[in-house]
Amino acid sequence: MTLIKQKVNKYNFEYFFKEYSEELFYHSMAIVNCNDVAKDIVHDSFIYVWNKREELDASYSLKAYLYRLVRNNSLNYLRHKLVERKYSSQIDDLAIDLNNNIDDKEVIINKVQAALEQLPPRSKEVIEKCFIGGMKYKEVAEELGISVNTVKTHISSGLKFLRTRITKEMLFFFAIFK
Image (cartoon, rainbow, N blue to C red; front, top):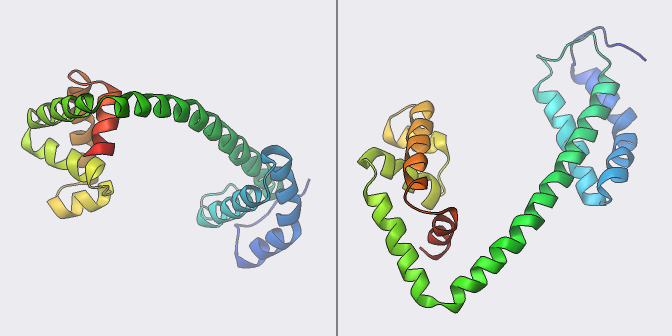
């Protein structure tokens, strides 16, 4: 096992990419069994290493690190797919139930809107911008002139409040049918 003796730089990074990207692709492919996904995982892993090059411990083998990173990213992909499948079927069942009863949609939307109206004004504004408007925390922080941590605090306290008044399914359907 070769240990790297210097920080990752352009030259040794290019070497590792050329030398190991194909091997890493097959390593990922053996786990995820999908060409495009395996390519993306290897690509993303190299980007991650490049972005973290200043923080990497030079006493470890970069090759071993890349293999572990690709393996973990491949396994995380599979875990994510399992979660997607699990919740996809539940969401489909709930959507069918809701679509079968139009009155339920109105009741849910009204309950969620009533709960949102009970939030403090700033928390309501932050939650609406993030969850309904689809804005990123940083964008909301800049627009409102507050810190990202303050946005997170508003989200956390607002969701805690909403959880006491509405179910997850209600919030989900409000977001879909709003």
